[in-house]
Image (tube, rainbow, N blue to C red; front, side, top):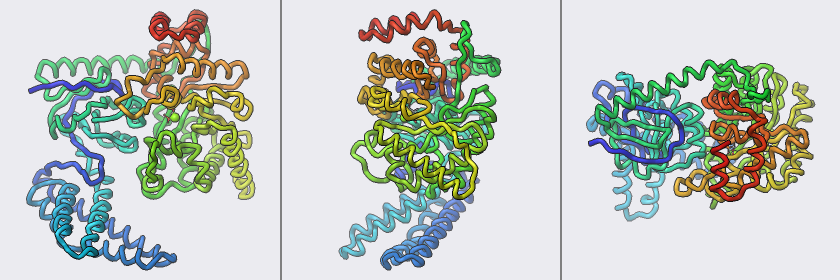
Length: 574
Ligand code: PEP
Ligand code: MG
């Protein structure tokens, strides 16, 4: 029986494909059947994971032996190694795979649960406690297995894609979707400007979130339609609906391909105002795609994605190579690279595991960087070294205090001195800018104007913090409103202060990539828009059709309104 679910549309477009259920809680792994043909491969996947974990444990043992770690640490590692060789764990899991034809993660977790039950019966307290070691070993194995492409299904032969169905996804998971022919995804929770949604949009993967308990309602392999524009998911559609959606999908693709003609057009308004349309990127490889669709540069490179979803963080050289490659893909064009904005919904593996009572208000972004001076210095040196290879601008996230700006600038000064000592080249005049994404920053702009070369408004966080709503929480997503008079005033006054002082101001939050707001932002005075590349052509179309001379006075009047219904009416007439 077909049925329809309604959620929040977070990434436009239509995807038609088969369900692949995943769960992100590490030991709450997904369960799927392995065909007899693939059993051998599944068993070797488990064997490979065992060998990888053995290597990890041996490495850790060597590190503890050469350091001065407590001897107990070595003993635990020995115990974990023994567990890895225990037939009750891995051999039993192998038997589950062959007999039940299930995936390796599932087999391991099933076996772990049986063992834990037996441990619970043991009277000896010490031995009973050892169940934690079994869990840790299984966690290590599952982590390796999940990092292995095996946990996402192979490309389908029927031409349809896979629709990932999860309780929630981390932004770093979504990044790997592009390599797995994932056509779309749907989740139980999530908000429209969560980083998971942002990454989906940047990859043009249709997505609907906040479906509440979709994981309980669909089954592996069922056919679903994901309408990421309307926030609708249709499960097991009938022939007629399916045909209609195939048609709509083809129409959308045609529209997109027509827009491609605009790639080489200069984004200038009807009355000759020149506009810059820049790209937001998450990975260095995104830069060449951005260039191919005519981006005027990179307005925001979120470097935290280089640090997420991995055990060992990138060192200075690895970062330098990544930053340089972006600059090289954009010869002669500005590339704004933001220093680490870790925290809130973007956590580091292991490193940032402190339980925070309220992560969005916690040790995030510049606060985190200032508390990790070694890491921050390595990033700044890598950025400065890369500045020798193009037009780099450095952007600092989430500033609120003058002393944070001063400290960040002092760190940059120190990084420059270190590079001079090392005789490494960098652009001495590299421009430094600040994100305006905390209301305090927008309300006390003078201290930013006096200290920095440029500003970039992060509307995603500015709205979150102004309206006190968690951008990842679907329960308050309906309150997330770029047209709230308070938000518009903060955005408007920041842009206008920039114009008055001759300080370049861009908007790099999602508002800049939504064509519905292009005319309003142009009218307020914005000339630099930074957005995910998939949106550039649609926004360009709006720019080409706009007459700023006509819009500006109306936009000014709109900024002064504080009655939402009148404001919305004026917005629609703009
Ligand atoms: C923003 O807050 O608007 C922004 C661009 O930064 P991020 O989405 O990475 O927090
Ligand atoms: Mg932000």
